[in-house]
Image (cartoon, rainbow, N blue to C red; front, side, top):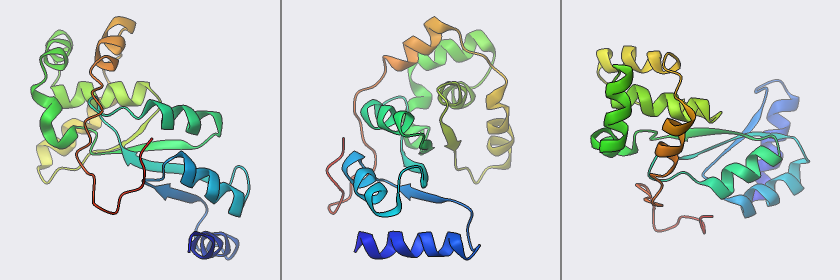
Length: 161
């Protein structure tokens, strides 16, 4: 099955229907398998659940080594991280919201973020995520929040890294 849809993605790119090939929720084993099908350097992005409570370091390291960018969906952990005391303290120091600080942290890690909001004010605020530059200690404090807490884990999920 994977060979079929990966071949279809290559064909779509060759026909000009798309410029790049990406993946979603691919663990390392799937990325390796897909790369074997389409060739090295052909998969340019992997969209995965990623937030302060689930940092996916092993997968991110693999993607970095293989020049695959990472896009974080649910970067605010379904809103759970917004009440975190560490994030709140950093946000207060920067006079920003916990959401902006969390998005800034991810962006400083080189991760693409796609926060969702139906609230226009929140969407506009999210665009300010590039404003704060977090210090090394602040980045480390946020990095220490990882607890492997997955918010999405369907029954047919792959074996996560």
